[in-house]
Length: 276
Image (tube, rainbow, N blue to C red):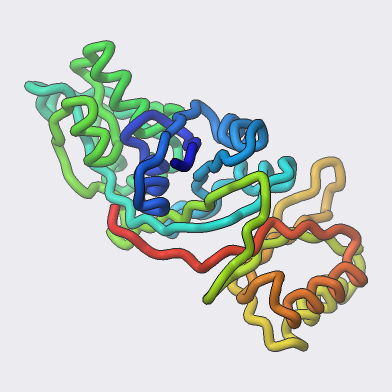
């Protein structure tokens, strides 16, 4: 049985992603912070972790990009979850009673249009969507509501006041599955990596050309500033193919020759998209 960590309380979208990915019995370990998930996986054999990496509306989860660099873990899978946010409160509470709305900052950002229409209501960032729902239930907050999942509303016996309040109903979050050891990608696979180059003209072009020369499809690119080096960046890539493929392996070797730093984050099967 997989032992899987996720950030948040039971009812969090990360829990739903974990259940959707493994599709079998698993032992779940909720964590308060994203880094707690990384520490949990790094601390024992056979452990897995599930973390969000990007949302189609609100963008990347910067903290998890940085944690991928800091911890020596491998990406072994992915799943994309279609996310629906619901406004929920204690039974008997009406919309007119609400003075505060709590949720994770990502969820608040994803529901910005709905929240802007509310008058006299203050939004409060919280460490987790489901955690906000749990707190409202446990503390009996009659003037507060949470933005969270349908699973969270059921788990904490809250009443849904408004359904599907995300700004864009095509709202998807991609989650990564982490392990201490690489597992490789079978079938239709992708490889994630991070690298840096010298801050000189043409350096990034030459780095990316190692994949174009081998007809390797570049699926995604993100940049993150290098701490302590203003104007210099790390580049995170997703490319089509597995590190076990000869052309990918050769492309990575070529990249090592033209970069100042390279870390392969993992090769893994391309993931499914599931309904949240």
